[in-house]
Image (tube, rainbow, N blue to C red):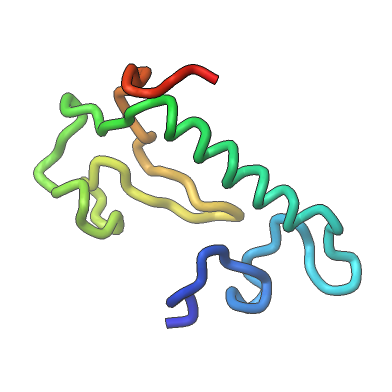
Length: 101
């Protein structure tokens, strides 16, 4: 598959279908920095909080199955971007096992 062993999609591996920062000669000069900044921010959030799926939103489809099923707890719909079909209902708890910094 074209996504295999690729951490981040780009305009070439996605046949120019993935273009949040443009492509070609007029490509955004800060796109690599923005993706790195988003990665660092996500790492900081994941370090400070625990996330779990809300069990009250459970359906007969297992959360780990591919989200193409219409009854999937998350589901997926595509347009210009990818969205969850039913939202992403999570329970978030601040972690107590880390030092504040």
